[in-house]
Length: 470
Image (cartoon, rainbow, N blue to C red):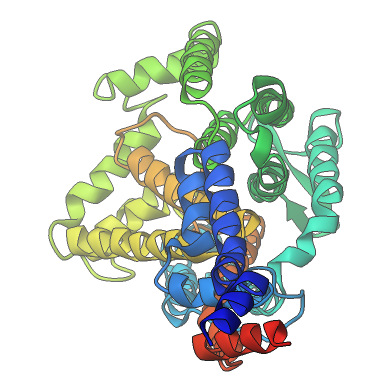
């Protein structure tokens, strides 16, 4: 009997089989750790989390031992059934869009009456924009965001073409800037499209170059050159604010993707010096900067707009004067566009501004949540970029309206009057919803895969014994 057992053990030793079963898991873990190490930073942490460090990591490892069923969780086929929409994010965006329509009417009724003899002129247009924007957000949220990959470079080329058209004489002039393209009665602002376009392109490019993200010539410089072209075209319009937003988005996503921090820091310092020189040696910009430094002395000319904006916030007090009762709309230029937050401060007071900030904080936090839970680097980077876009634009707009920053000409997302800004932001919100919907299906797929039973230890031993029997 002992000889038989020794013969069986010598022929089919169970121990190597157990080690063989565990080996794919160890290899997968080592591969995930290697990729995470190569990427580094937030991207490395996200990749390690997806490879088994999440709350479903144990179940996923068991599935991997059965031949890679877990890959169906991470790399689900495009068009596969997905989870429900992020109701909090969707509700907050719709609420801000509706609130924006109300505030546009309140801020523009007097100007519309004077200019167009119709108090509801801007209201009617913004209401149409709002309906189209919400529909666009809904449609985008139903699509798999990965379907954008084949269109990444056409989108980038289209954005460059539109920006180029504005600076070669085809743009529509408003004030001293050529920031719009007029197509019949429709005016398109290419800089707004460029912000979302650069996020989509960076998400695609950075996700494809994760193995070489720390390389200066592959992971850093090409992305800086592309955004540099877009920035130069924006500056030519001129649109200094949009150029700075594009640069901030690029450096943020490079940091998230794991690019070397010394590269980001050194180029940030150099470009900051270049921006300071551009302001200093540009007569109009420098004059506006000096007026912003001393608004009291320049409140009748160059600092008139920011001074009146600060007056709006001050007159609102704690709870505001009430909707439609603000008086600063008589004095504040562009009250329904770039400075609409000042009207919010006057009519709804400090509490209204705090509520507005809280709404943007919720949207940004839901975007970050979608990024952290995304199934792939492409979705993570896109969600981080969109969340950053919303947060930066809202923060800069509010800071400009409060005279914390010089005038930049950036809209308040979802609230300022204008179809281009509203539609682009709605599509961006739809992409966030699409990314969050894809992630919500991961636990269900894990559970479906786990319903397939694993072979028991006794079955493995019995199979080994039967193979070694004479």
